[in-house]
Length: 232
Image (cartoon, helix red, strand yellow):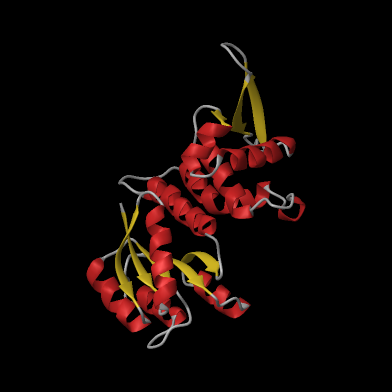
């Protein structure tokens, strides 16, 4: 389980966010704070792995709280969930290491994507030993690979970029092609949703389709990520 500290000054929003977080498998809220100052006290004491952090708060706002977390060397990841949508705040939060930034109001699925992306990152980076360049590149792919493989401006209406990134990253981690149902179950999205994204990726030559025949019923479509060949 990933222990989460929730720092949010609005009691109603705090409760909704807590319920959202605990709907995602693998996460539990171990502490809640209403101010940045109170949040810092919990961060020092609870040693949570992840903080969900608001920006607009009394007694130390989210920007100041994040800066203090870094200054004190507290080993915790941060996802900002806030109504602050100005470029300066977003840039500052990302500069100081916020792993994701979610603008209120938001739907459950957006927070779910952020938490699942965190799990992918955590499963890749945890443990001992060294990483090869290839392994490091695969790890970074959760966040940057897909920026080069998906043309956001040409995505069909109704498709979400973060979900697209998550599907590409998940497929890239698999040794065998997956059906839409297997991909949906592994990522935690609806099967009809997974099919829409996979169909788009297949038409965009980002995913290859393997049609398997045999048995009773319709042929089974399986998908795998197209590996880009590097040129020297």
